Each structure stands twice: as C-alpha cells, then as structure tokens.
Amino acid sequence: MIARTTARIRGWGRDLMDWMEERTGIVSLTEKLLYEPTPARGRWLYTLGSATLFLITLQFLTGILLLFYYVPTTDNAWDSIHYIMTQAYFGRLIRGMHFWSANLLLFVIGLHMVRTFLSGSYKAPREMNWVVGVFLILIVTIMAFSGYALRWDQEGFWAWEVGAMISSYTPLIGSWVITTLLGGDTAGPATLSRVFALHVWLLPAVLAPLIGVHLYLLRKHGEFGATFEYSERLAALRKRRQMEETFGSVEEDGQVADAGDHSQEG
Amino acid sequence: MPEELQKDPLTRRQFLWMGTLGTFTGVVLTVPSAVFVLDPAIKDVLLERSDVPAEWKEVGSVFEIPASEAVEHLVEFTQKQTYDAGEPAVNGTGAKVETMTNAVLLSWRDGKLPSVLSTRDEGPLPKTQIKELERDLNALSNHCAHLGCPVRWSSETQDILCPCHGGIYDINGDHTGGPPAHGLWHYVSRIREDGTILVKHEFYVQQKGQIGPGVKTKPYVV
Image (cartoon, rainbow over all chains, first blue to last red; front, side, top):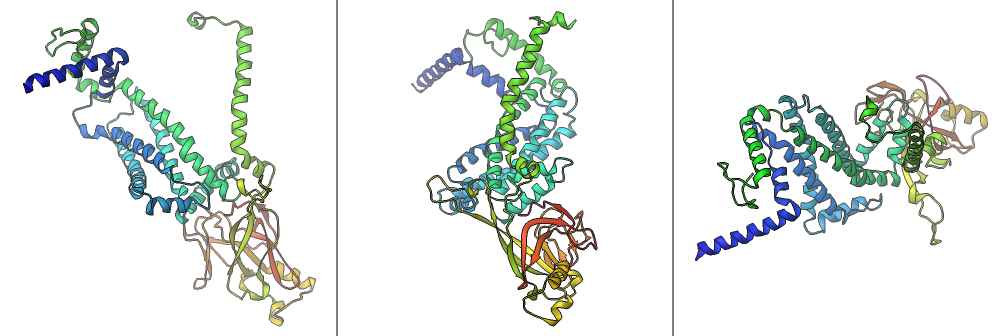
C-alpha cells in the first residue's frame, strides 16, 4: 500500500518535472548550472567563490530590507538606524547580518583571491576572470566604505572625510574627485545623498552584471586543474551528453531509457 | 581579408554616417548624466563657487588669547547644499538654513603676546595696532593638512597634534612632523576696533616662517 502510494507520488512528481522541462528547460538548466567538476585536491578551497556569492546575495537581501527604514538625510540617518536597532522587530538581526556578512565578505574575498593565486587559476586562458575579479573587489571595497559612512555617526563621517581627502591627492583631477564625492566643497547633506546613491544604486548596478561575467567566464573555462584531474570523468560526461542529445536520457551503463525521463542525476 | 569576413559590407558613406550618428547618440546619452553628477565639481572647481557664503563670523576677542597657548573657538557657518540651498521653498515657508560647525585655533605668532596687549585689555584699538595684531594672529583651521582629521592643541608638548596619523604642527600651524605635506590652513581673518576677531570660510597656506596671506586654497573643511 505504502509502496504503491510512494510510487504514484513519485510518478506525479516526475510528470510535473517533465512538463516543466519540456516548456522551460528548467531541469537541464539547473543541471548545467549546478554541476561543475572541481579538482580533488583542496576541494573545500574551491567553495570560497560560492561563499562569496552567498554573502553578496545576503548583502542584497538584507540591504533591501534595511531600506524599509533607513532615511538618507543628515538629520535622520543615525536616528533611523537607531530605530532599526532598538525598535523594529528583528532589526538587530537584519542589520547585524548586513554588517557582519559585509565584514566576512571582505575576508572571504581575500581568501578566495589567495586560493586563486596559489592554485595558479589566474593563468591562461583565465586572465580576464582575474581582471574582472579585481574590479569586483574594488567595487565591494567602495561599497563597504560607503556603507560605513551611511551610518552618519562620528566614525562613518570621519572615515568618509578621510577617504575623500585621500581622493583629493589624485594627480590633476583631485579637486574634481573630492567635490564629486562630497557634493560640494564641504561635507553636508549633499555628501550623504551621494554616498547613498553610490551604495544603494550605482555600485550594486555595476556589481551585479560583473558578477554575471565572472560566473560566465568561470563556466566557460572551468575550474583550473579540473580538466586533467577529471579528464576521465569529463570524457564520460561528454559521451553521455552526446548520447542524450541523440537518444534522450540514458541509464548509468549507457542503456537508452524511456524518452523524456529526466529524473536521472547529472 | 577583413572585408571578406563582413557579412553585410558597408560603404564608406554608410560608415561615416554610422560614426556620426553613433557619436551624436553617445554624446546625447552620456553628457547630460555626467554633467548632472559632476554639478558640484563644476560649480566649485570651474566656477570657483563655495557651499559657504563669504560672510564674516565672530570667533572671540584678541584680549582672550593668552601667550604660548592656542585656544579653540567654534564657529557656525551657513552651508548651502541641495535641500538646504537657502532658496524659498515652494510652500512659502522658506527653506531651513543648514549650518556647519568648524573649529578655529587662535594663537599669537610664536606664542608671544603682542606688545600692544601688554598695556591694554580692551578696545577700541587704533588702525596701526589692529594691523600689528592682524600680522601676529594665527587663525588656524583644525582640519589636518594631511587627511582632514580634527587637530588639537597640546599644552604639555606645545604642539598641535593630529590623532589620526600623527601630524604635528607648531603654534603657528607650521608643519613640524608626520605625514602632512604643508602647514595648517589659515582662515582669512580680520580684527575689529573693539578687538573682536572675524573669520571667513576662505583659507590660505603659509610657507614656513612666512607672515601674511600665502597661497589661497580650498581645504574642503568639514
């Protein structure tokens, strides 16, 4: 009885997945997105990129939530954060996640970069992914720095002031850079508006597509070291894909299964 | 060779047209947004305007500054930025006027009390004495010449110190140690007949030992 019910439910599930796959390609897409061979040696070190992606996603999500309360004006910025921390339900948790995961993010990016460097993953043909990564870390650093200033407390204010003054030492265009960052020749309401615009709109808008390019390039070339360490597995995978394209899905031993059965793991 | 690779060959005329149209579209799309964002830089750097109106503010009296000490005075400047632009608001209530607080470090050149002050402790002061006092007065910005942290007078060491990166200045604001590239900024100042000191939100840098206004600059004081 139980066995029959389980089988029936499994059958429905499979039908539903087949129906979705036929119309959206969701199953094959998920397989394509989730499965990536990584080198056997130092396998856990190859999760640092995913950890970075997770933390960035967490930043986006908690950041959106904080925007329900944060007020980007010199009069109210600090008070609105004080409200989040003391009055709003789960305010401490949401802001704490945003704050601590931002700190952790920079740390994990550092580790990710060290791993990439030490494993030689920046070498041909992956140079452009390293370059994109450098732009990503720059943007994340400016985001962390501008997030610090958004609190508009003594620490954040002076940090932004010092940062802006550093920018004023840029050769030839120093005064243009600092006045653009301050929104004038003094720090005031315009400064906070600018920091807000940078932190919440401009930089995330640049960051998101660059993350896309970073991931696309990773998938295009695969993890470094994966090809020779997994050559056998890759050969088998290619053979299977070829079979699938010709006959539909195949069993582990290469036998052709029922057409349209995609419940097989990739 | 490249021509063979072209799926849809272009004539010279078409190429030039595309180039012209592309440049025009590019300019129309980017210039307004870039100028919009750079508005403060254009106004400050190119047109040499300031967020702070050039008005004189009182910061104490010459009779209050002791020898061998720098005393700190706070001064409120009107600041016009974005919604605090000082223009009447649409609803007719008038925009709120935003101010910013700056600190001024007042001292006498080399910490020596001017001879005028050893004989008198109140105004009115004659013009010649005012000139002498103005020459000896240091009205320094507390904005460090390195990266803008607020500096303080230290009585024990007879120095002006920056807490951030260890910039050191003497009582005249001249750079004596640490990373700053030059001495502290001096406020443009004057002294009234009754001995009141007035400062404007304008600054100059003096060479070491120089007396009187040096090169006018913007310190981006906060």
